[in-house]
Amino acid sequence: MIVASIDLQNGKAVQLRQGSQLVLERDNPLELAAEFDKYGEVAVIDLDAAMGKGNNLALIKPLLRRASCRVGGGIRTPEQAAELVSLGACKIIAGSQAFRLPDGGFGINTTFLESLSRRIGRERLVVAVDSRDGIIVVDGWKTSTGLPLLETAAGLEPFAGGLLWTCVEREGEMGGIDLVLAQKLRNSVKIQITVAGGVSTLDEVTALSKAGCDIQLGMALYTGKISLADGFIAALDWEKQGGLLPVIAQAADGQTLMLGFADKEAVAETFKRGSLCFHSRSRDKLWMKGETSGSTLRLLRLRADCDHDAILAAVEPAGAVCHTGAWSCFETGRRYTLEYLQKVIAERLSSAKAGSYTASLTDERVRRKIMEEAYEVCTAKTHEEVVWEVADLLYHSMVLLSKEGVSINEVINELDRRHKK
Image (cartoon, rainbow, N blue to C red):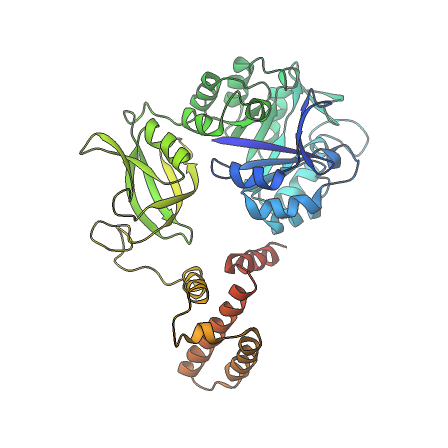
């Protein structure tokens, strides 16, 4: 899997050479996150928090709503990590605090890691094992801990679901990764390894992926040496299944739509066109779903599975997906979800037909209806009455959300955030 990096400093996305020399900066991290999310998880590192110079939390919060982010930089307490998870972070990256002991020395801080793992779940915890010449360094790579990389990595396995290894001496230099040490690190633990620092060619991406590692791109991405589309393709295991990989198309609400197959050309065209493309096995040619019928599948994001030999495509269908005219190749009817209801309401509000009840609901009227329906829910006596009145309340609430420009997913995410606190 490819992981794009967004390092934050003073509210901007930056790239530093050797952790200190500013090479470039961008003032559009929100746009970057939305684009990067098409290709994989996004690593958001708060450099200011890591160096004790404030934080970029006000910027990180909206980033977590734009992309699947693993967040690191200055994570010093389990409560801080839990708050980020509740806001939407899919993983937390712990760094210096994982190696600083209460007596001022260095070692594996088991107390901190145990409490962190318990609070957010081992599967969400990634420990950064940045090393210089095989020795772990902390404090923005300024302090050597004296801890050997491989032995220490093995000791971290009980607490974390993954490790992030940055080869510091090669970071930002665009001179290539230490593949030998990367392979040794991979062999020393069973948990997931993400490699960063020095990756500069697609051959390295392929080699690291074959070794079972994820690849985090920073300088090579921002300087244009490696594109995320090319990196995504290079990280897939094309040899295992003869150059064709299964692609599962899934709607944003999770409904499975269809299964197809893609070669490298089809994946590249998917990113280029912004619509899902396949390789037609019967015609032995590129095929963009809906190219003639109009029932296209607009790309939201692609994700590779854990073995890098299958692809999950989150898409937005323009119409019926199956050639039979059904919504899905696996189900004849479209599942009625709150997302679908909001889409129908939005269409009726934007293109009102004569006599449309939805279109007749002014801001004042819809609020009055919500208060009326809430009262009727509370006074409902039978099972059937509760179902009927709650349906009315949900419908009018969804109209209000649509009028206010609020997505139902924002409400679901807020409920999820409260659940995780």
